[in-house]
Image (cartoon, rainbow, N blue to C red; front, side, top):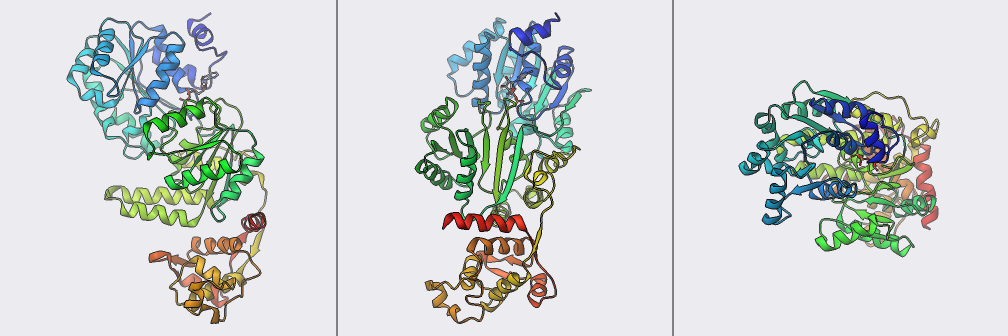
Length: 517
Ligand code: ADP
């Protein structure tokens, strides 16, 4: 049997290569530069680990995170393959010991962070040993057009200068054509073979819904229909991570919060509890996930709009790396987009502003779209695929009926107008639903003509209508989230324009309201 198949079976325990793996392995064996874009769970590690076992030297893997390196090293050591890292998390003695091992030819893999290449001593050691090839993991970090640009990755442009005869193999799960070109040029790749897998995770079922109130009822409903499964819930803030974890625990789900505000000790405990299946759910900010070594994550929930489709795709990609069916669920609201926009506007780096806003817009469009979700993601990464037909809510729900909510819209807009365009959504809904709260009484809004005109609809239904009005820019959110009418809003108010809402969006609002009361 060809040696590579034997290693695949005997060392890694796999019967056959997954798509693209064999081609990538062959090119690496032939010492060619390669740039490989394979979705999360596609099996990138194997692509760059297997060829090393057919070569005499050491493979240098450059990776952005110590946690990622530790996982990989552990996995290799478990297979009896000699791998170590040199990193700032270790003592000088430990690093010196590893350098010596390198010089003695005792290692098959050495893992390092990109900043190591600023050290002349380290580069000097590498120049004295037999390197098989360099691996750049998470290569999108090289590009400022990507979503996780890391300045240290820019050092890697020196690699080809220092080691002109050593192949570079770059890997990432996400790269638009622009990022792909940027990676190749920043790393000075030479006649590199590019491999780009189709951007579809065919074991992931996608569902996206407008968030009703704080979304907690929707999350519970999801968990009820996906009983006993383990997963990650991503939240917008640390506080929300804490409160959601507590809420789930109170409802009988074993869960813990994870965010950057926790001590390293607590973070390690939560990570271990999740990986070793002592808890089912981690409720986290984006601080959790990159390099997580758990292939059987069955669901990923987002409680609000992610910043970009790149982030979203990478985060949902953590589900189902073992190839088994997995479920992802995103809750969004127009107010998330507004919050994110403010964050971007306030950012110091001006050059990124427009790109940031464009990416956010694409993310929001994805949520409100009625097209195949997998296809929208693929198109975003400049890939063409057919509709998934069975793997997303939009493909499986068939034709969506449109409900004429023009009269309700008029009531809403009239309340905005009559309260002098000085109040936010909640207050407007309070007027319509005849609330007697203090603010209503203080401003004498119980005397307005529209007061109580909307008691036939729940708060959540009004929210769905308000979201739609904001979305089509019939009203806009001013300072302090005050609603103001735009031209289109005036036209709807006068009855010259109509407003339609997807029946399912209204339906979700009605259903959640019934369950909450
Ligand atoms: P990526 O880095 O692309 O996200 P990994 O390298 O972590 O993916 O691989 C994901 C999972 O797929 C791992 O559990 C790995 O053992 C498994 N895997 C990789 N290649 C194969 C293969 N040829 N056959 C079966 N399982 C595989």
